[in-house]
Length: 425
Image (tube, rainbow, N blue to C red; front, side, top):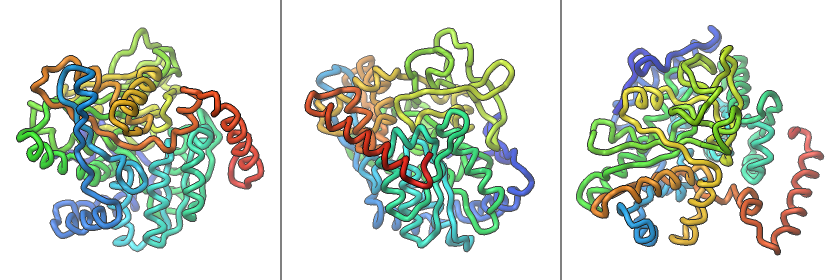
């Protein structure tokens, strides 16, 4: 699996942080270096993931989709069946073990779709840690069910109302908190971004997905898949499923970004490939402690983004993903909001599985690819999360007459509850 060179992956990565954060990052880096090749630590991590989260997750065949699309045989790696409903718990359980070894008593995290925040709150409750979650105010509106559960688990949820009020701003605020509290606080960064060693560390814990998949493919069809498809926001689920296959060039790796509503500035989150006549095309830059591809204006200001899925609504991307794209090991793709909604509905009605909107980007990209492949080939889509959290977003996209009154009442209730809360804008 991929390893950095002094925190860099080609030209991307690094550690660009205030001096006050260096001791905490160096402490984390040294601990990770001691443990990453320790078989006993990996066994401890796997046991926790098995007993608490329900790993291994299954590899599910999709015969109905395969027949309907008429191409490659489609399989789903079911990260939606993890405790908390997404792949995010893999990373937080691993980082929780590191927190115990460092002797810290508080954790903080950023979250977009709320799945990482929820997973962090679950881990903190399990391990007896104080927990603060930073979340963009717009994302709180979109993913209020996860906010509710985070609070019930004892976490403080802090709305971020600056800038675009989404994941980028939440990460900025979490870094500010950590700069002021790193002596007793660990930042549980949720994706394979940020300053070294986070991209490599998060990939390490998420690689349990791809390691399981390797064995499952051999058991199910006697070889590795011809192609693996994953959605790409920051990059944690993609790197988790891709990393163990990087040295197998016969396995095509496809990462699907958020095409949003089109190539207009601020209407999408496509960073890895050209998208129409982009005026805010992604360029190499340094922000949030690391160097990668960011959507930015000509004068270097980070751009606005959009996705129907809050977890993909991010201005940057993992430096590992950027490097793999630059070296042509990863093939980028994108799916528009409308394509994503169609893929969501198709999976539900054909296979009876409810995907997250983030994961539905991978479905949309994977369905296109499967139709282009031969019937003898196998394509695996990483289903990174389930769609419970997206129920109101989906209900508005596919309204049913009997739902309209209920939705109006529920949205009014949520609005009144937030107005009466002391910690929600």
